Image (cartoon, rainbow, N blue to C red; front, side, top):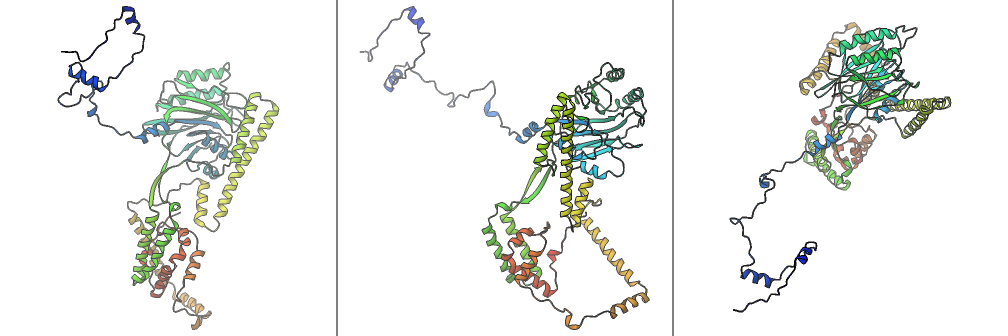
Length: 586
């Protein structure tokens, strides 16, 4: 049998074979005729499938077909990344009355969650407006005034998403003290505010007395809570290591397992007197990223972060309609169909009911109600771009002054600081004056502005109730009883007095029969358009259509509105659908 293929035999020596290792491999794909020939001679074989099924590749002993895909909650992941550490601060304002706006703006810019303020100089009575200015929307303010004389006082300004409660504290002769408790889920942090007035004729108390009383206070307070931050103005020069009272104070902190964190000047004189103190072994309230900058008085802000995440910002769910995306032509075409309802209804109640239902369907068709959640971020409404630039200029002059501390730069810095304080105070006063001017003649709006100025709560002051319907019925019963009582009082009036009143009325000019109105004159469409156009643009939540939209499209539905008014006047019937009202107390 002849060999169907001829093969060329080539011989290689050892060196040539070794050289082939460094030469890149080149693969040649044979043609179909060669592959068929190799298969026929049994040289080329294909490996079959196992039991007719392809072999499943296992990855590390795990059967991938048995794994279930888990959907990740990306919202939770985003919230974890957005969380930031809680930031606290302390500052001595030396009267907060004329610095409230500057203080709030700096707290907003630096994302400070709560700030301890010493020397507020607020009194128990007469400073409600200042407290209201500090309790802007998004913030709360609580303070402990000095009881015996003017000056002093400690306050805590914090964001309203924190759960803060005031704690009772003992009074001491050498220093003022105030305590608060902040709860963040399961973490409880005790805030202790300290202000020690310096020795003076009005306060002749030595540092030795302070050390005795402060040691007594630490023995009492350290056993009451696990996590604690003590901060405030101690008026002890911690930068003077050779001072005997400084050494004594440091030894006192060390003996109770406390550590003082501030190591940069906090006063314009270059001393460290505003302190932040925590427990040395408390890892939950450990302090980092400590900063001492921005002088609001002769003291600067001292801020730091603690190892706790801030609670989430306050969110509100609002329901609204997107009128911007509504097609005007399509809406007008549907509104014109409302005029045909007058022919289908016989009474005014039926007409108003059909009008309300059809109009509601049209509004929901073009602008359906949508609920969305918004995150509330507080801001000062009177803070402008000019004030921001002026503050930046003030900070630049402040850095120059703190660097060289010459008399010339001090004068320049004081002038710039006073200009900024006056500008921000003027902007705040102008904002509230314009709001009061806009509320002229509107008692509800004026009451709202006054409540904002005094920092009052914006929640509805409704009495405790379990059902809104029962509460509404109680209000109705109260006013009904008042009317019945008024009628009984009128019936019990003295007869002689009532006769004299009646005679005086009869003696007055009585209108003639020609001027007595015994029927209503029907209105036309022009009268309706004029009356509605001249009315106030106020909207109730029971309205089918917002008043601005009603005025805008009144010419389209004027015929049916005119028919409703004329039917009501002629029949003496007020539509039942329109007898509902929403009552909101001031």
